[in-house]
Image (cartoon, rainbow, N blue to C red; front, side):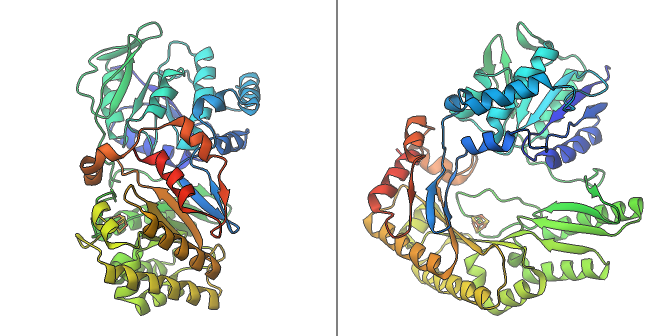
Length: 482
Ligand code: SF4
C-alpha cells in the first residue's frame, strides 16, 4: 500500500470543516499526510465571492436586495478582479503557503457556493505546479446541478463529491491502493464503479452519480479547535434534530443525548490536553425543540465551567405558540447580545403549507396554527426590543413557492412591512428543496434548473417593503419555478 499525501484547500473560511474532514479521513485510515494551507487571509477571495452569490433575497437596512446570483459564473471568470486575484496567487504561490513540505498525491477542495470561482483559480494554479495530481472538489452545496457541471467542465477540477463526504474515504482508499488511477491525459481509470456520491472525469466525460451519506461525528475523531493564550475555542454545530418532518427539509438526525455525550467528551479531551478553559460557540442549533433536555445540557456545561455562546439558533414559531414563556426564559437565560436568532415563518397560508409540506409533528400546519404563530413572532420581536436583547436583531425567513397568487403575495408583503417596522430583518428564499427530500420527488416538474439569464436580471433588483410589488415577486419566482 502506498502512502497518500493530500492537500486540503478551503477558501472562504472552510478551514474548520476541513479540519473535521482531515480527522475523519485519518480515523478511517485512508490518508497518511494532510496539508491545509491557511486561506483565511483575505487574498481578495471575499470580494470575488460578493460577485457571485445566490440563494436568498435579503432585507438590509430597510431595502430588499436581489442577491440570488449577482452574476452568472462565466461572467465572474471575465471579471477584472478575478483576473487580478489569479495573477497575485500565481506570482506568490509559495509565499502564500499553498505548497507544503511534501508533494501532494491528490488535492481536495471544499467550496461553498460563493467560493466556486476561487476554486477554479486555485485548481488552475495547482495544476501548473502539479499537472499529474488529480483535484477533487466538494462542499455543502454540491449537488446535481448545471452550475457545478459548468464549474467542473470549465476548470481543472477532475471530479467532485456530491452531498456528504463519507464517499470520499472509499474513493481515497481505492486511489491509495491503486485500484483507481489518474493520468493528466485520460483522467481517472480503474475501479470507478459503485462510488455513490462521486462524479469523475473519465476520458473527458463526467461519470458517476448518487449521493454520499451523512457523516456523523464518531467517538474516535478529533475536533479542531483554536488555542489562544489562555483559552481554547471550539465551534460546535447543531446537535439537535427536529420532529416536524417538513417535506422540503433535510435536518440532521442526531439525537440531543448522543450529540451531548460526544461533544462533552470532545470538550473534556481539549481541556485535558491543553490545560486551559474551553469556550464553545454553538452554531445553527435548534435548542427549543427539546427545551428541557437542552436546558439540562447547558446547565451541565456551566457546572463543568465551560463557557458557551449560542451563536446562531433557530426558533420554530410553533415553540412560541406551544410554550412561549419557557422560550422567553430560555432566551433570557442562555442567549447573549451576540446571539443570532432565526425564525422560519416560511408561509402564512394553509394551502401553501399543505402543498409544500410545512409540517408540525408530521401533519401540515393549519391556518389557526399559522395565525397564532404570526402573533407570537410579533410578541417575541416586541419583547426582544423592550429588553434590548439581540444586537443583530431577529431574522424572519419566508419561502416563495410556485403556488403563490396575488392574495398570498399581498399578505406576505403586509407581514414583511409590519415585521420590518418592528425592527426584524426579512429574508426570503425560493423553494429549492434539497436532494432526496420528499418534496423534490413530489414536485420535481415545478423546480426550474439554473437559468443564468434570469438570475442576471434579478441581480439588479433593489426595493423596499413599500414598493415591492406582486409583479416583481412573480419575476423572482420565475427564477425558481417553471
Ligand atoms: S420545522 Fe424547520 S427544521 Fe424542522 S423539519 Fe421543518 S423546516 Fe426543517
